[in-house]
Length: 434
Image (tube, rainbow, N blue to C red):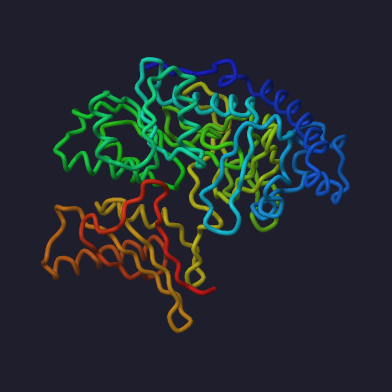
């Protein structure tokens, strides 16, 4: 099938033209922020900068960073870049610590965000013939509203189911012959598991593609979802601070996500020194929004760890690709001095045939960190033969040791005994009082 684009002239724009567009938009955005966001203007003044110092993307590294701490400090209106009368909506993070992040949107901001989501839907094979079921949460969370708007722009029949009520989700998929499913990967895995239990085989399920994001997931989990639902599973990336899903999305090649560079400039930095790193070197992702007016963040530190690549893509898109985030600097666990990402643990489990339903419990006993992984067995594995369970646990302990370089306690639990999530899965319970 020939690759399709929602906005071909932008998505396949020659690099030098794209660079010129970014330069022009960055210069205008820096001036917009300087004139309308006193909080960031003060940060620039502290570095001795004025908008005249920024002549193009090559000067981007001079600008100060923004972090989650700045967003909390400036809450609620301190980073707003447009008058209240021009703002038509807020979205907010599902933040569990401190104040929530509240992002503002003008109508133009929403239109551009929906364009980005529409690009992702078309890249996944969507068209005005598609039936797109949006099973991300609606409301303050950006997942539902973003994909909903993108689906409308493409002209799909949109089913706004929101998350939860699995029975109803499956009924709509089957009765309305949904072809695209948008939700978190953990919920897609759960829907697949539920449909399998109902006796539905992949060739009976009408879905052709899935657009899954909002949480980290491994290649092994992708494979497992693709096999169960009989679809092609595409990754999508975004964060509320920058608009929501659609900052970057996967194409048919499924080897990383194209960043919508006409709206967002990406850098990868050394998280400790702030130094900008070259292509292909892993570091922390930093984004500058160059078209958003109501909440225009410059050099925002995402805490996501990834790699950028400008290698030519077979899909014909020219925009830079980011790898799947391999974790976040803030969800990285440090256990007995070793850096551990939940995605590494997931890889071991899926490679050994376990479902992606697990919980990581970290504690500190007598000043030493303990790591326990509770893993659900599949119905086929479930047994009361203790010898067999002990053998399985030992295999997982060995697999985790070779992946992480440390010993974890593994507890195998009955199928369906770990609480299912309809939004972001709660993978880690850290009981340490640090």
